[in-house]
Image (cartoon, rainbow, N blue to C red; front, side, top):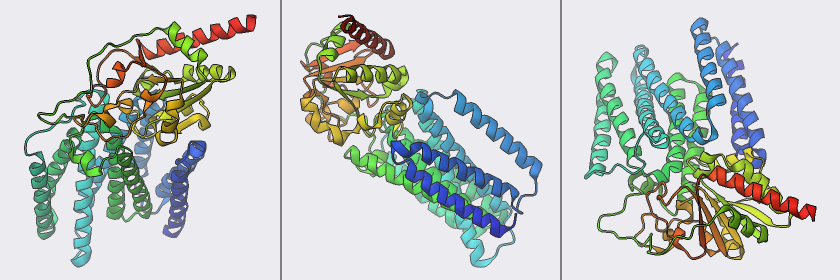
Amino acid sequence: MTSSLVAVVYLVCGILFILSLGGLGKQETAKTGNHFGIVGMSLAIVATALSDQIAEYPILGICLLLGGVVGAVLAARVAMTNMPQLVAILHSFVGLAAVLVGYATHLSAGHLTGTEKTVHELEVFIGVFIGALTFTGSLAAYGKLQGWLDGKPLLFPGRHFVNAAMLGATVYLAYQFITLGGQDALLPLGLMTGIAALLGALLVLAIGGADMPVVVSMLNSYSGWAAAATGFMLSNDLLIITGALVGSSGAILSYIMCKAMNRSFANVIFGGFGATPAGATSSAAPPGDVVATDVNDTVALLRDAKNVVVVPGYGMAVAQAQHPLREITALLGAQGTRVRFAIHPVAGRLPGHMNVLLAEARVPYDIVLEMEEINHDLPSTDVVLVIGANDIVNPGALEDAASPIYGMPVLEVWKAATVIVLKRGMSAGYAGVDNPLFYRPNTRMLFGDAKKNVDLILDGLRGTEQARAAE
């Protein structure tokens, strides 16, 4: 395939990727957006494989086969609850690829001279820096999401000074790398790679568990810029376009999520969210009795309610309770009850995590509402069913100035007539912050496995429906 034909195919692929991102912006068009992306990536692989720059087809074939098998196995075996971890580890692959390509292109660029050589060396240095940062940062995020690492932020005295010193050392090594050139430049390049790898890990380890959706989005942006840098190193226009699309969309999504939490991006990256400041006291868990309930009382409340709101969280994802929830929604709707789902922007461990799970269960799109669309309706709601959510329904975010999550917009479920919280116990949420919602007089705690309890609620509603039919 000639280079001009490859360029045309790459242009078509770029358009398909843009259409893919546009489609993924709405639940109704997400499937179409995925199809555009699949077609675009398939065309890109075929065009690259058939280009005149490829000579080692056996090696390429082996790599495509291995990558395809690994991808197919992951797609078939990874559950939706583990999708955040999968996304994080895939970001690490992109970062590692950028590092390896950087070293390879540096070692094979001995023919360049003058300005062209300087520009190429800058491309290599920046690409390796972003790649190493993304690689270790993604591994740290994977460890947090998988539960191998503590979800609380790793904070140590002078961490900002240490980070600034590492950035300063990176700038000095960039000067050394460009000045020395050739084989001699491998030492500053290697030192920079180590510093960038350490910096990436420290940045993510210093971020608390409640910010992991923003971290995943941020790493998505990093991986995009790493891919764009790889495109510059390889003179591949499609990689540059694709990387820029991913990098910019990830940055925009991170900004949107930070805005939803009423925090700046810098505060997320450097703030150590989830750690209570020294000397701070919180009234997040006021003294009072927790009122437990059972499935029968929950069924009775839902049966008599005219307006029900369901708030899903990561606990719903772990329990895989979205499918019986859809049936509960259908049963309540059949008896004239208005049922809607309230989605917080940072619910779950991945941007849009809850939306994807509900779409998988075929919950109608028109009853799945974002926080700003439904908060004003909560005071007129009869029953709010909170399933596995914690920090996103914490009233301390609005009422307790000493709380680490103070100022974060939350779903104001406590304004409803009755709140039923499905939870295993009284443990704090992923941010490590106690929730005073559990002690409110209108809150009922339904303890136990969420999936089991939701199934029992469904059976109870079915029994009520059958009894009515028999009458």
